Length: 304
Ligand code: NAD
Image (cartoon, rainbow, N blue to C red; front, top):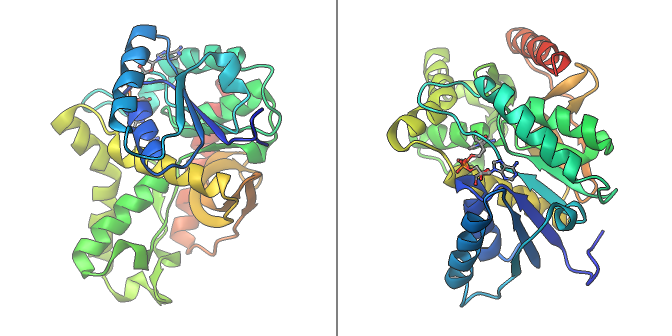
């Protein structure tokens, strides 16, 4: 659904490092006609908008403005990036208590919500907060998504690319499950031009890449305090796929009926949201790891 001027509209709630980097990425690529930013810190939000507008002077500028929750609720895509970020050594799950409060209050402000809106949860822990978003807004499951392990999969592809001297775009590698320490490297379904990734690298080398992928955010946070460029690129890409109705396959977190919880699986993404969760043939080890992750996620969701 388009907004009143029949222009696509994306709202970003949380104009911090992730929100503004995402806005910058979206605007540079001209992904949405209208982009609104909402933040509890009005002054900060105003400054970010002025700065972003200066940077975009020479592009075919989307209409950028500071908005209210009411405006945000009527957008085509509502990206949620508000809340606390990880401190050095802190896990994403440790943010749950603090961010649950922030996200619950934001979601309540979004009601009544555009019935066709897609919610894209970015605030950590993403899987559990996406579950919360569905419960509070009551949007259909396929319209509530989190970026999940898309970023982790990108990281794995980059690490594989360095090892194999093959461009990341040519590498189909999937990290599934939780966007966190319980993620599962699905090497058994990863391949390059149909050749299994396990034919290129032995178990030991793949384990090292899986560990590095899992620890990448900790490493970045230790060096610079936050991660935002990678996730901004990922979120902009997801918005593009949705608004252009592309039916692309991405590893994203959504409600998986088989496990009765939110976790990342390869899904088909289009304007309606998630149109299909692909059935994967993981090996027994990965399948068990995914089931264990699902049990843990399910327990955490029950605590909400
Ligand atoms: P940040 O501190 O730079 O920004 C957070 C923003 O949220 C601030 O501007 C703050 O004013 C705003 N905010 C707080 N409460 C609010 C409310 N009730 N309404 C509106 N705005 C509110 O943090 P950041 O580095 O941008 O990180 C944001 C979130 O994104 C964190 O939870 C972080 O862990 C997460 N993150 C997720 C991924 C991913 O892969 N999903 C990657 C990086 C960061």
